[in-house]
Image 1 (cartoon, rainbow over the protein chains, first blue to last red):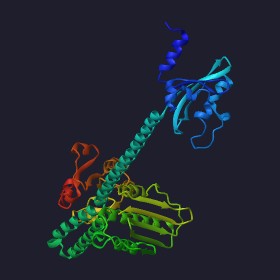
Image 2 (image 1 turned 180 degrees about the horizontal axis):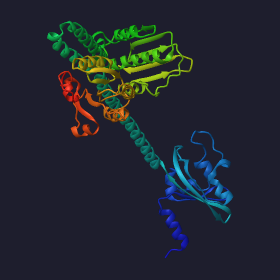
Image 3 (image 1 turned 180 degrees about the vertical axis):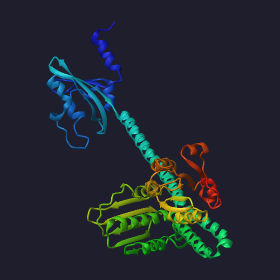
Length: 348
Length: 124
């Protein structure tokens, strides 16, 4: 049977954990085969007697020199305490660097206090951690995209509910009143014919009101002018109806996808509505351009600013989701007192 | 004396048509109200015999309003209430009777409904 010292040497020789020992002066007195291999040397003879810090720990990862006086690894030799770091690095013989975790414990040697060091290459763990981080980031992106999708569905549901309410409160009431007046006119035709023209005038008025309300509702879903005359013309029509002086500039020479065109139109419509309602502006400029790979709609006013994208009653949040769903970008700049710029960009 | 009526609906165009209809059916329209709050005030002021009450009001629903109107009329007898709705009605008659509602009629059937009979007055 081997002596305890032989057993110890056998263990150190075969253990896959890199281990080495430095003397009181910081020179390597022993390195096990795992350490020799991990550091890229041929055998222990190449390492023995060399200053450990200057051999494997001589620079910071950014390439600047790392003086031994700043090295925490040598502290156990000096202070007699066990130290550990899970975020360090070593240099191999060929100058390449690799991430490590290490432990250093004081070790009393015949010439004075040295230290025993064990380390572990963490490249694989780092890669695994990086993979986890990337997977988490991908999950977060997917969740964000699902949340956007959900918000779009919810806002579409809310829009349909509003549409049903508008139909119920508007056109349906007009038609019910029309029906009553027509029924009365029919009854009075014989009983009191002199009342019939008045009832028919009412009926005509209800019908006109119903048509106007239905037309406005349809325009809110998809304006006919957009399909017929294109974005630039539709925006000019919006501008002409706005209760503020609006200048429209720019041009769109390319064919636009329907979804992009409609979304750009509603961005302009919402911005104009907000400018009229809240900005106290004297002038609004709408620029519509399709240059290179981008369609840009920008609505600028010289009003009081201070608009907030998520403000209650603002249609901007819903619009931002619609723009986002088309891989576009909606940006709002509205410093207090500095006017408002709402800008939407869509890839073409 | 013709029976008196109150019209409660938030749509002015509909109220105009309903007023003509009730007049043609032999009622005297004494007041109009656009919401339940105005309706309560009108019941206290005019004590109408009948109320034509829309199921969808800006401040509450017609069934709650019906209950409130009956209480508002007290100690005078509660008005006879006919609830109208744009959508086809879907309440059990027993539910309505408990609230003092004589009938529930879809608005598009109002012009052809026998309103005096529904309100419990024989036709003039």
